[in-house]
Image (tube, rainbow, N blue to C red; front, side, top):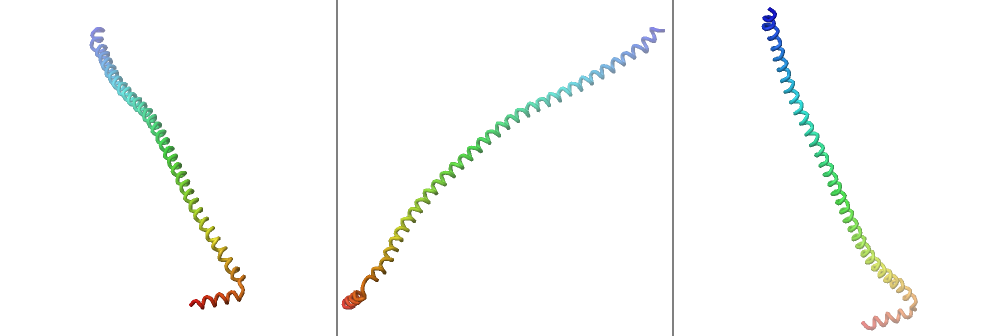
Length: 136
């Protein structure tokens, strides 16, 4: 009877238990493999993010260098423009100074004429007028 009970109840119970454990083990193994795959994908994404950040940092440095070069070029052109305009302004000032000197000299000549005329006597003026009209 014990043997029969053992064969009919205990062995099938342990076989069912074994099958259940094997099923659970397979399910857990499958789930562990899936989790391992997920972690490997995450590690790959993290590694790619590190590479991308380094690439972005290099690109940012290159852009900053290009920006500095553009600023230097703009400043250089601005300095050249200021120097050229300054040279042009000096030339204009020189021309204006020469023109002013000529006008001042002409003004002095014109200011001296009335003094010269005042210095002539009334008689000289009459003689000059007579001579002028007699030639007509």
